[in-house]
Structure formats: structure tokens, C-alpha cells
Image 1 (cartoon, rainbow, N blue to C red):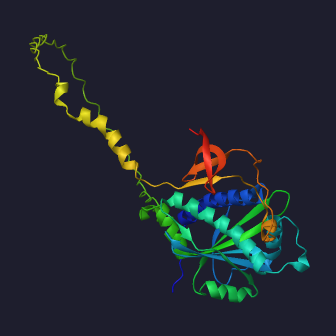
Image 2: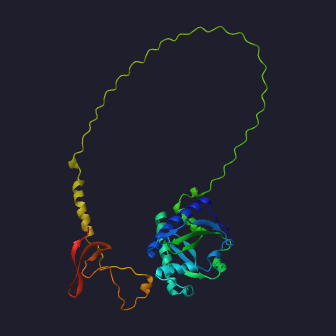
Image 3: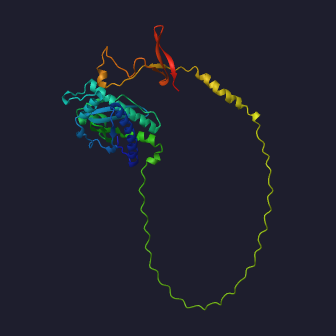
Length: 353
């Protein structure tokens, strides 16, 4: 398979798309960790199989996702193992000693959840950007034990691919470096959804050099002609006065007979009065899910994994407080909890408008 490449317009376009999607990823991580998160502008470049290396990130962790709708292809993220340890520690609310950190089931699940939030937010931003739904698989993480085997697994030696480098800074913690690898066909597909007119993606042809003008031959001076006798001065000529054109005859005004349309002839007035009632009757048979929320709370992943049978969760509402009633996840009312024939119920005390 022959090498593919990207022109400067395509590189700028994918850089803009990734920059917007990473902004959404930073917001998702900040919400999850409850800390400020900043992401640098991505550095996009096309690399060959031979020249790509990531020794500065070793020992490294790889995270892979696959696009299942809207785009096709896979996306691999590389990050330092020690940075993964720090992020997982922040998520679980405790620092993990270096000697105790290994990619066990708990830590793999934690980093996959972080990447799931990041890449999910990124896919949503891409969907809004290209105007088409983009879905991804759940991320899978793995340790990269051999960089050469990693490259051979995900990329063909004869093909170039796109490397996108950026840094993620977490307030009061670390600044970690990410390398995002994407095959060129996936990048071209993404750019084509952003810029459907393929003629705009073509590089401009270099301007042709201006043709050089031919040398101008020196002109020989013409011999001076003998002086001619001057002609006598011409007699002044007088113009005949021109009569002004006769005034144009006024055009008689045309009378246009305009008659208003009688309002009685418009029969749609009664239909307009009845249509809201008819539409409302159609909505009356639409089922809605009603749910009641007695309270909420926020827990760290570390606390959640320690839940056992009999664990007590304290909510943010006091005993006797009104509960909220939701219709399709929208709060519509509040009320008091009651018991009706051994079943729980809610007596509505307030309608939320």
C-alpha cells in the first residue's frame, strides 16, 4: 500500500477539530475530578513508521477506542504509566505508592472510566462539529511492553500515520503528556465531513513566473524635416442655436381598481381555533415515566468500591423534607411521602412551573 500524506489545509483542519474536541474532554475530566483542568493546543504532524518513537513516555499505557458510527477506524492514546497512577489516585481520593501500582482490574476500570469520559465528550463535540452522530466503543487499556510490537500491531510499516501531541494539566497535581495516534484514512474521513467541498482541500498550484519582456531595440533618431510654411489662421465659426426639445406630453394616470378580499371568504379561521385543542387531545395518550427523588449525594470511586451489604448512604435531604417528582427526568412538582395500602405514595404540595 502506498504512502498517504496530508496537505497543510488538512493538517490545519484536523488540528482545529481536535482542539475543539479536547476542550470538551478537559471539561469532562474537570467535572470528574472536581479540579481545574487545562489542555494545550495540539501539535499535529504526519510521521512514518520508522521515525515514530515515544521513549519519553515509557513505561507507557495504551488506551484504544474504535468508532462504531459516523466514522470508521480506531484511535490509540499513549500516556505515561506514572501519570495514570496519579490520575487514578485523584479519582479514588488517595495517593497510590509506586510499588503498589499495577494494572489490576480496579485500576484498569478506573483509567478506562477516565478515558471513557474524555473520549465520550470528544465524540460528542465531533458530532456537533460535523453534524453527524459519532459513537465509540468502551475504551480498553493495556501496558505497552514492547514499542516495536505496539507499532507493528496498529500500523503498517509502509504507511504514514498522524501523531497528535498535547499536555493535560490538573490543578495542584500533575502535567501529563498524551500522544494520540490516528490512521490517515480516518483523518481524511473526519476532515471531509468538516469540509464537504473537496476542491477546497486541494493545495494551490504554485504561481507561474511572469514572462520576461523582450529587450527593446534602440530607436534611431528620425532626420529633422524641413520647416513647413504656417497656414493662415482659421476664421471663427459660429454655431446655429439649437432649439430646446418640446416638452413631453404628460402620461395620464391609470386608475387601478383594488378590492379587499372579504374576510368571510377565509374559512381557515375556525380551523385555527380548533387545531390546538385537537393537538392537545393527541398528546393525552403519550405515556410519561414518573419518578420520585428522595435525595442525592456525591461519593468517590474509592468509597463506592468499598460498599458492602449493610452500608449506609446519607443523602442531602433531612427527614420530613419534601421530595421532588420528575416526569421524563424533568422536575414538575414537590410533595410529601405517604403510605397508601402498604405502598409508598406522594401527596403533591407544590407544582413547579
